Image (cartoon, rainbow, N blue to C red; front, side, top):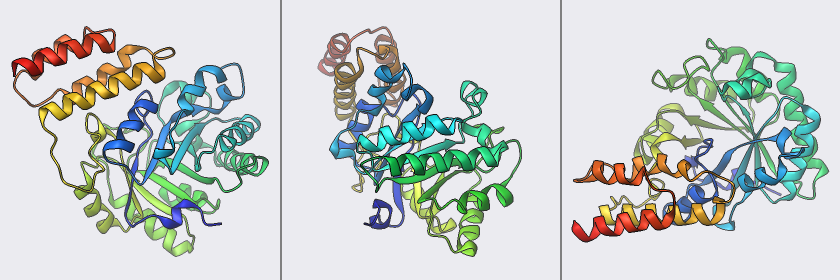
Length: 323
């Protein structure tokens, strides 16, 4: 049976995994207003999933059929736990499992996971094998496996790190075109994505290469795909406040449409995640939705003080009445 990667256009576009951002409510908005070709969840701790943390983490694994193909991103440095978590999420019906080997979060790295994987190829190999074994253990054997990583830890390690990953029989590999040390402080260097594509072609493997870093919109993504030859483009920060970004129809939403989308997003967040996540998480989205129009700053200030959908709705309807 063909995995979903074989059926995608070239280039295809992906919604990046972002902690405390790409939750179920956020992803639903994109599935409705401008669906990406592939959707990623925020990263989830494999260790947490197979221990007492599962009840809360289940909320990170909520998804709707509209989001397919949907890839869950896991992190761990413990192969036994990774295998068990991979089996668990494969049985939940996800289309793919992505291993986080690029996250610079200190608490993730302390566990030997995320970007720390770039320092230990044998551990990385064991983790990839654990995911494959977990998929084999599951009822859903057609789940894909991919890795998201960077071009290196504190320096460029493409020449040894990338051939190693490409030899692991992955369905897809996402390259964030910066090192761990650079975080997002310097512009992404897409010439390195081109380099990765060249290595892949030389090795003759089928792994799809996805470029990531500073992509502004679809047009910019098409240009980068043309320049580098990569198969797919992943968009991260530019998606904030813009559930229309993946829509193939070039449409600029009106202020009213933006504010109504923000209300819908808030209502969904409260309904799906209100019991387990802090309402303050929504506020980072308000900064993005409420931007670039008269009265935006004053409206933002008011929204930052809200604690519920009802309060947000009242403020927004007052604003729309008076503008």
